[in-house]
Amino acid sequence: MSELAYRLKPPTRGMGRQAVQVLLNVMTTLLALSFIFPFIWTASSALKTGYEVVEYPPKILPRVAQWGNFYEAWTTADFGSFFLNSMIVTVLTLIGTLISSLLAAYGFSRFRFPGREVAFLLCLSGMMMPVYVTIIPLFTIFRALKWIDTLKPLILPSFFGSAFAIFLLRQFIMSIPFDLDESALIDGASRLTILSRIITPNCKPALATVAIFTFMSSWNNFLSPLIFLDSQKNFTLPLGLWFLRSYADDPTQPTEHLLMAASVITTVPVLLVFVSAQKYFVEGVVMSGIKG
Picture 1 (cartoon, rainbow, N blue to C red):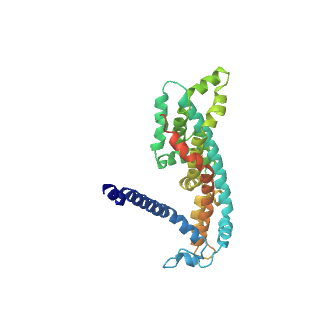
Picture 2 (picture 1 turned 180 degrees about the vertical axis):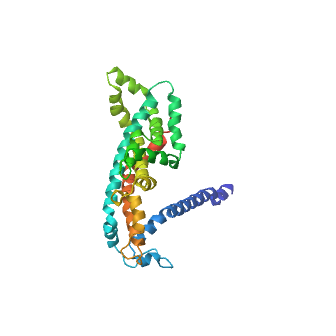
Picture 3 (picture 1 turned 120 degrees about the vertical axis):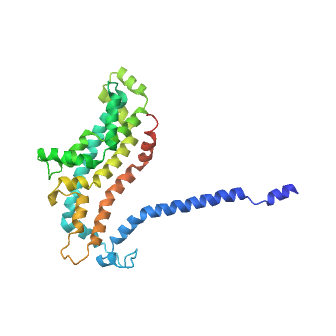
């Protein structure tokens, strides 16, 4: 009798776990939709007419997809020049940040010298300092160098390292066994050879993580171009989007659809970079905290 009752007893524990799993899946899906909905709305608005974007009540899908909005946004107000300037600034900033931060991180993780910990703490303090604190001194320096209204103020600071990148790379390098360095030194390898042939190949996840963050930060940077650039020909994409917002041949015609199309164009390179490096991204964040 007891065995029969046991067999007929409902599996409440298994059903409870399934219910919790379903609830978690629903909550995760809703949370993901809440994050992705702004981009869906932007992409949808990019395919609408100007009046459809501002109509009430709003509709998610356009009546007829206006694919010509992307071409019009690209050709309006020399948007192609904004895109080229952003590519130049972002690529050079990425190169400068990776090289300088890797060298500094290698020094902090492998070399012993007086004041190393103090110097590293000073470096980390740069992560806690708001950019608004340094923008005025930087403007004064670049004005004295006559670099205002050029792309140099947006590029040159990256060749002096990034506090976040140095911290992340240092933590990752410290997880690499020091025995590899000693074996290479015994074989006659120089420090630069060790850095280029041993440290750098093993730091691909961390370098990919730094590359993603640096690309996004430089690509979406609005404050620095606003302060340092004056001429329209030197505008980057964030500043160009702000300029496009008020640009129209006829002030009475809405331009929100062009702004949405330009925003989609601006987002595509960031998505491509993230998708191409995503397999290293999580690994870089996780592995950088193993040693410290």
